[in-house]
Image (cartoon, rainbow, N blue to C red; front, side, top):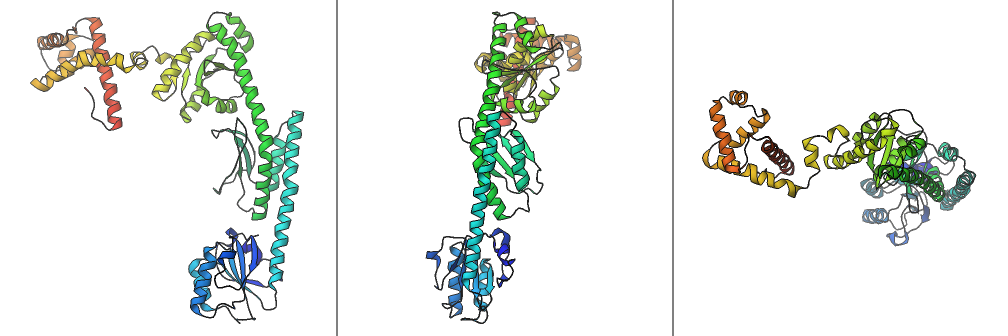
Amino acid sequence: MTVEQLLTVEGLGVSLLSGSDLDARPIRWAHPIELLRPSRYLRGGELVLTVGSALVSDADCAVFADDVASAGAAAIGFGLGDVHERVPDALLEACRRLGLPLLTVEHGIPFQAVTELIAERRTAVRVAESRLSGLPAGLLLDALAAGRPIESVLAGVAGRFGGRLSVAAPDGVVELSVGVPTDDGGDQVLVRLPGEHGGRLLWEPPSAIGPDDGAAARAVLRELAQPLAVWRRERVTAHETAERDLGRVLALVLDGTAATSALTARLDSRSRLSATAWETAAAPRLRVEFPGLPRAAVDGRLIVLTDDATALRRMATEHRLACGIGEAAEPGGVPTSVREAVAALDLSVRRGRPVDARELATLDALLDQLPGDRLRPFVGQLLAPLVAHDRTTGSELAATLRAYLDGGGAVVPVARTLFMHPNTLRHRLRRIADLTGRSPFDLRDRIAFSIALRVADRSSTASRADGDQPPV
């Protein structure tokens, strides 16, 4: 029980003299003692009962209060009438300074009455915990054995104690939730589920719950941990088995071993479908938020098929998950959509956002899939000589090349944009060819120059993000 609850007991003769936050001070035990420094006999959480026989001076009062507070006691209970008719002012001042609650016990009320009350309340809590803890766990195991939903059992626990109970995956994705959520932002109670698949049992207690009910609820949660771990293991195993089964069929279709009809027969869909590809870490959330969509595990990726990828794309964006999205196709075209989705997933991992298949047929997508050591020569051979020449002579060959490429290689319009004569532009382009050995007038070389500029721009953006000087 707490200090606040002790004060509400009628006929006990205990009154509050000073102190605050009494509901946050549980009393573990009541300990009568008349030593000036009793801390060596305390373990914390005690109601220290004294008649003050050792408190003969103001200094004694300060020493006594400091020593009791240092031991983590819940409060001091001062018995009136035997030694002191009233609480010494020095003790009251010390308790106020320390934030230690100070109670008075009326003359004629034996300390034994206080200690017996606390002992009885402690025993009652333990009995309640014992009775409550085994019952929900047994009901949960019975439901698992019979293949019945477990929500009703958890709802009974939530109804008994209030608040909301949730079961979550190790990454925090809530898989099941019952009860009424609280809005007071109180502390959440977490119980980790044992076993390979782990998981968590979470309780959001109501703000008005007392410490006795809170202790009983925690005992019940601990008892529920083992059967809930069994439930999660069976649930995850069932999901993984279904995903592997469909994945085997899809893999056979992708490598040409099986006909596409082997896959479409499993899908039972006449709608146009888009394949979405995900990293396996996204599986718990996908299973919870999109339980009805076909999922297939293929080569360390999770393929999810849907007739509308909008919600999946939104989920990926909201939770910053990598996701590749293939073009919608008739059921017979699903393998092509899967290949697109897998390629888009690799690009999504690099870009940090969902990527659609239509983004694959771009120069940027092609560059994203090439290693840096394959791209650096473009900058070193085609752009670095121009930048070096510009620094030395004050020319603007690099800027001229960029404008020329942006203008589609049309000399006259680009010259007009740059406010120069077309012959001046042609002269600069020839100078670029002299310095690099590549002609801006040649289509293939223009493509190479475009790659060099794009790689340099991307490197410059990355360097500024890291706080470095941009490269050439």
